[in-house]
Image (tube, rainbow, N blue to C red; front, side):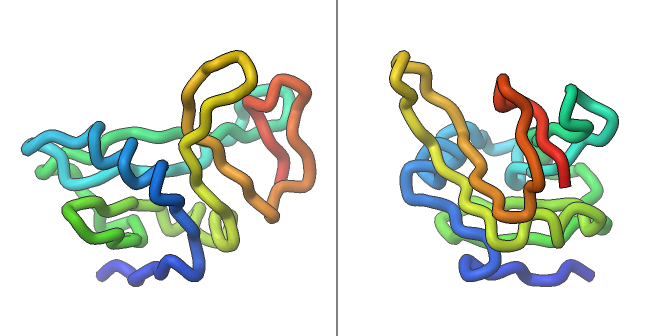
Length: 117
């Protein structure tokens, strides 16, 4: 059984919702956000992957954003995502990407790819 996350626990901006929804096709049930450990100089990295219809999500919490978009987070990572904002931005160089602002981070490496908790 999955715990139902709410938009109060994890905020996903309209721009991010639009981008993530565009990444889905009929074979996908949602997007998984997770934290990979032992990565980068900060020790952790965010990872985003599509979830296929037949993928096991029993070890995940779910955030149903409506309109066919559900974000899945492994239960082991859920507390680290509480209070974060997921956005889709265009940076000063014109690169477009998902950006996660997470108050649970204690540090972020200089390149911005890895974080510490």
